[in-house]
Amino acid sequence: CARVMRHSEIGAEPYELSTPLLRRHSDDSFFAVNALPSPHGDGVVHVPSAKGLFAADSEARRRKLISIKIVLYTSLWWMAAILVIVTIKKTVCAEGIYPHPFALTSFIQPMTALSAYMLSHVVYINRPQPPKFEWREVGVLLTMGTLQGMEIGLTNKALEYMTVAARTMISSTNVLFMMCTARLWGLEHLGVLRLISAAFLIGGGLLQGIGTGDSFESHSTSVGIGMQVVSMILSAQRWALAQVVLQRSAPESALGQTNKLSLLARTLPITGLVCLPLSLVFEPMAYEAGKVMQQELWLNIGTVAAALTAMLYAELQLVKRLSAVAFNVLATVHQIPIVLAGVVLQHNQVARTAAYGFACCLIGALFYAVARQCDRLRVDH
Image (tube, rainbow, N blue to C red; front, side, top):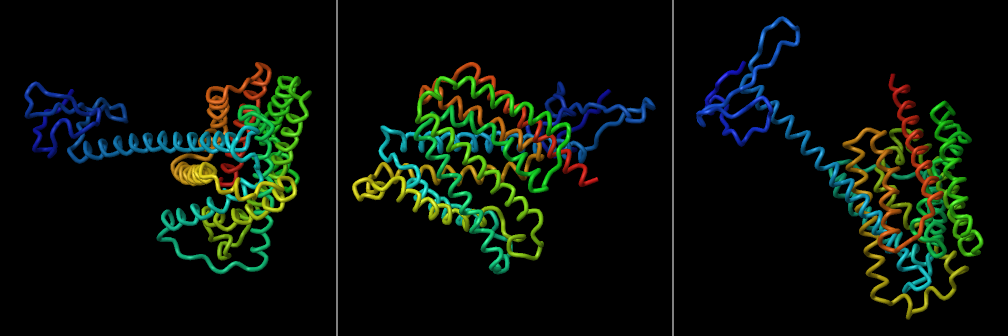
């Protein structure tokens, strides 16, 4: 059953509407509007009005636009992440133009802070300024910046000894450190889903250890893995501190009213300063004029800073449009294209057993994302 309507009744041509309620009529001056069965099952059919047609078409277009934006922002996020890691690896490897990861981090972080500061004024242009920080809050920011500086410095230093694929696969066990830290800090409780997640993560870590067993004979690889493990422990502590700050700060406090980008703009310079003494101790030749003044070095630094800013922006846009579970799933599986980039672009070798371990860690991370979403739903209800 259908109703025939003139174009003038709707005020649009056939190609201007995308709703499935419409179909073409033999006379191009008309639409054939599909009737809808009654939701009450009384056998009565309903023909949508012109207003209903426009509403349905508008909703269909809105959903399509949101889907396209999600795909674009996800692609931006993943491509920027690949660009950051591959560029850093190319710069700090033994054959790179600047094999000094701590010093490189001390340059990158302040530039990223500047980019985050500028982006925050664009994204949050209409948000009022937060109050001034108290000394206790300044201490919290200093602690977060110090932890982040050591964390990022070590993870970049690990790239000097490990391939991109190997470091990313080792990093997939990071959720286990986060889970244990959250339990020790009293932020989360253990449950069935978290125990399942822990089982997958521990099994995945063991498989990766077996898969890279031959590599442990190399002292440099062992050093890189050790640095990455310490980095993940520091990352878990910083994450727990950030949870406390974001969840338990008073709404009227400066920390409670400061957006994520502004927090990064304040902590990243501290991160760079922390890496400065590390580079002076472990990389005493890093700040020689001939090395620092290389044009390609500053091009790489600018590329990494811009890519990190793009990652932050894409992440913020995805948080607005996705559920917590969907976002955590994307955050988990985005390690896959990074590993593939290492294999394809830099010809990294990945053992089959290590790949199985990586897959187990990803499954464990997904279980953890579902567990956290269940916690949120329990709190809401």
